[in-house]
Length: 200
Ligand code: AR6
Image (cartoon, rainbow, N blue to C red; front, side, top):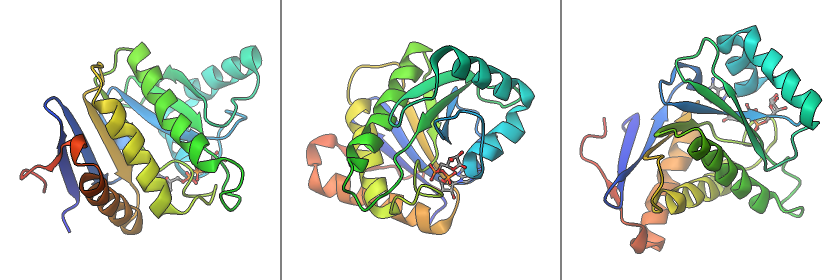
């Protein structure tokens, strides 16, 4: 399987699935799978804080003091510090508890609210990790389906975000997202998802 899959979404937007480390991304914004404290953690959160430098934690602390903990499903934007990305959009995914406490709806809100934050900062491109599928335990196959359906639906609307990249850290996640994209195209032909021949 190639390590970058590129899809045209309708006439104007692009979805990319790549294997890699999100801290190297040069999209306008990258998304952090944070926790409600906004004070950092392990996984992608730890990697982003390390790469962005201490200014990121300082800004997160300020937001935390002003607004309190960030609820699950919500998103907030900070500067990107030393990252190539201009902004970091922090969101808090649901903790998987068997699917009985609105985890799918909360996960969908994460992607919607992140893209709304990106719009507010006039971003043309955003990179997402696979929110909630690490420490928070959300099974990756249903999580990938929710992530892609939500993002593709929003990419169809006239918005400034024209490119969304999912930066997947391991082969298993990449395969789950690639299969979810295939399924989405099959189940919802009106989404006009076309695999680009420049995928590499
Ligand atoms: N680039 C891209 N993806 C990554 C990277 C990276 N550098 N590092 C890990 N991943 P997780 P969650 C993948 O646990 O499940 C933190 O402690 C990882 O392999 O980072 O939303 C926070 O502070 C997995 O596929 O996020 C929270 O407490 C995906 O990113 C909690 O974990 C998400 O894994 C959030 O848990």
